[in-house]
Length: 153
Image 1 (cartoon, helix red, strand yellow):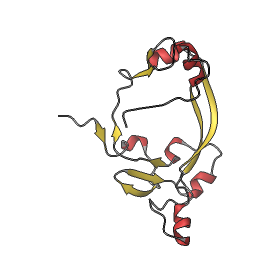
Image 2: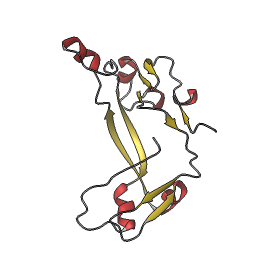
Image 3: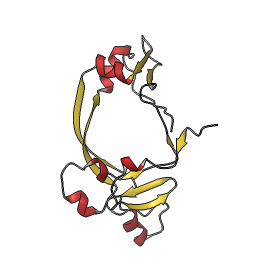
Image 4: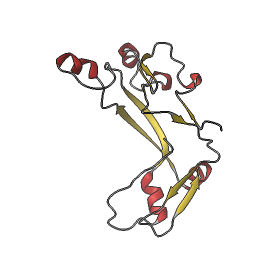
């Protein structure tokens, strides 16, 4: 049987020879802080990689986003349908691993987990459709206060 997972991202996705690898499985790595300081927006190959397990191999053309629950219309949308039906938005945001600078904390007292330096952080221009638009199209119930996500990994 074909394994639908791989243990780390393909080399093409992590083409930064300067990444500081904290573990091979699951694969976790961060860039040197000098690379982060070089630009306000972090280049894709300069982002930290945080994995909790194997990475699912998903064929984008076969993937579907399902919206169900407290909605008037359940949706099953392909990536192409998402792009066609909803306007794309761009948001500049910073993402940080909760364990960022754990190596510093470990000098004060024992803390479980990989010894992240200050590189488990990155700023990107994220582009895609707004969740609010998709929920509106599904007719999310008035007063529904939470969204639960599940995925292959």
